[in-house]
Image 1: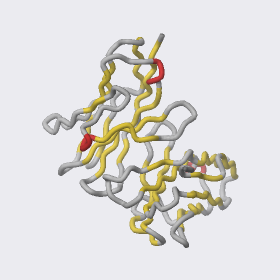
Image 2 (image 1 turned 120 degrees about the horizontal axis):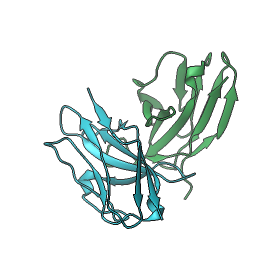
Image 3 (image 1 turned 135 degrees about the vertical axis):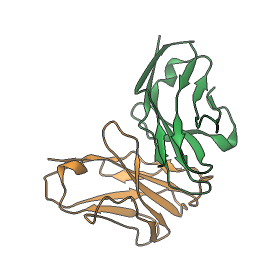
Image 4 (image 1 turned 120 degrees about the vertical axis):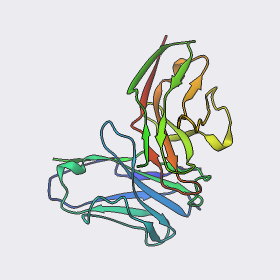
Length: 115
Length: 109
């Protein structure tokens, strides 16, 4: 079946602009995660959804970052007033449940470049 | 502090040689450990987890709680093993992964 998909694959924007990154998880997966991967680093946890609610947003760096999952499936990561330091690959993952025994399946990522 | 350390950014070995990718962790408690792999132009995918005690594509990893290590090993490297490897941990039964910075493995012909 189809894996996790993310759109767009690449996004170039100017400092100060607003961007939205979309994630479409594997059908039936209730848990959805966002990670950020900066150059030369491993993925860094941002936020986790169980169903429609953000169960843990402790990884969001500041209040410019926000994510939603209104119907418990597709999620959108929103970044306001983008800064050059936001440039990174944003990864989405999903799993059946939010336990470590359930494999997290990753999407291909969205490469965000802030000029 | 919870941390995963992968000391090598790049590891080059010849085909047929043994491979060991190092991973050390810092965690107060009993974490669950994973290895993820990313082949060229592919997405990040799970290679193996310590609780399964399995061998995948000839790779094994043993959790050493005394040395807080979870090194990934393969006795005979193959060219198709060339990829980026990430070690990760999570708290027992939880979902939040902490990843290391990754090691790029290059297997030379």
